[in-house]
Image (cartoon, rainbow, N blue to C red; front, side, top):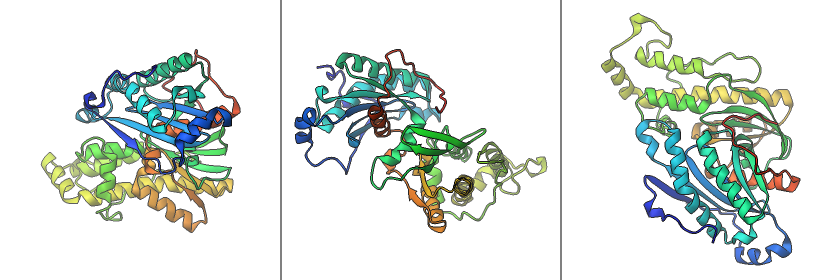
Length: 387
């Protein structure tokens, strides 16, 4: 068998495999598998390996049958993702993850119509692992290969489950490396109409957590403590950037000075600087309020631009996507703004917000229908343009 078990899961250290339970799985998967060739339903195996999570999913006729994610704990001790370690972990996990994804979907290798993989953007070593595996499998099974843009897949995560947005819609995609407003006119026709000119929103969360002394990954911890704090207690500046673009570098600097000054000022003044002990005491005594105030400002920056984009385009079908869209403050404020301005709001389930192969699979499904296939000469890219 092409996917023989080279490794057992209990030997995957320090990684942990999580199965995402798909509530909308077809009620009779075995019957679907039996009748697949007669019904000619496209069945796509998708692989996601752009950063530090190895994921595989199976999609049949636009329905996600399985979605497996292997996370990597090794990076926690370094306070961030180490690219070389991520690549090695992908090599260790990709065979068992794909194997279980296929089995949990209730299909066989002969049912697969195409192999999809994340082609860009991401860590180049990580992308190469997924890309080479996908190419090899497509060649071995003699099925088409489909390359997928990671950020476009985040947008189309909103099409996985009901209710789905009507076209055209706007999507705010927010992650550790990207912050964009995307105008989506069809599943394969998208345009970036606003993006960050420096740092991403996810980076602002993670760097704030690091400045507060929180362990990696810090973004979810900021969200956790923010729920217990007063978001109006501390004030942070909102950048005045023209158009629909974002900026978070100035906010990060303001937070740094705010902490170094123990809350007396968010601009640099040598007379305001306090000792390391006083700084830490200020953080310890005000952690919840600091997190709530920082999160409130990041969310307001994002949603004020999204509101402006909606007014300029006249579009009221609005989505959010990406890892930061799992943030409770952003989700709640987004829904509140939608209610206020009569938007039709859409948010993917939590398991489809962070990096996952289900979003790669749904994107590949639409590319399959359009006949957009890639040759074996396609190469992964750390950066990518929106076509």
